Picture 1 (cartoon, rainbow, N blue to C red):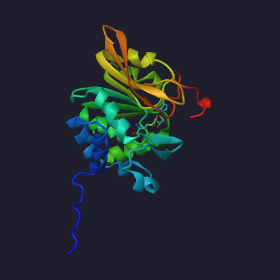
Picture 2 (tube, helix red, strand yellow; picture 1 turned 180 degrees about the vertical axis):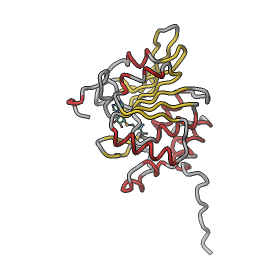
Picture 3 (cartoon, rainbow, N blue to C red; picture 1 turned 120 degrees about the horizontal axis):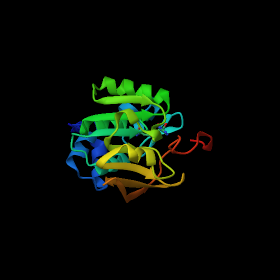
Picture 4 (tube, protein in one colour; picture 1 turned 45 degrees about the horizontal axis):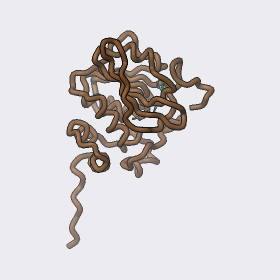
Length: 221
Ligand code: SAM
């Protein structure tokens, strides 16, 4: 009799295998990825590719980030479960879901209302109650809710994010892709005694951060 292969025990098991093979071993990050099905966050025509380690189109010229990059960014945020996190670029809501699993509260801003509403519907459907959504220019942050222990920018910023750094708590971490349109450097910015210290993690390529402290909309997007 042919042996039936056992189903993966977790919805995100394939992604966990891929990111582990690429050197991510943090148990909290891996278990958050493992609990989540990426297929839930991609358009129906993309579902077959949902567990591939690559960015995928989600409409409106935007993408759901590559799982490896989600893992690296989450790892660099060093979340312990108590943090208030600001995320810029809700997109599909996949990274937001990972953050909401590992932090106390997530504040997420998306400039495109259609994406924000879609992500909100999905995350509400998953029963996530610690996420606050806003539609607008995230390059200016969420001043009413500052300071944030962590800030994650999931779109490429052309330069140092001054306003967002101002909303970061003392001792906090800001993770952002910084640099020109064609290729950025994923950068970790730590705030110590009010001053930034920068560490480059890995080259990357994200869609543009469009806004007052990003690229201008007529530069495409
Ligand atoms: N993290 C998302 C995910 O897991 O699906 C992917 C984010 S996608 C690479 C970048 C997102 O940033 C896009 O949805 C884009 O519309 C959004 N974005 C670009 N500029 C923005 C801004 N100034 N404020 C808020 N969102 C912005």
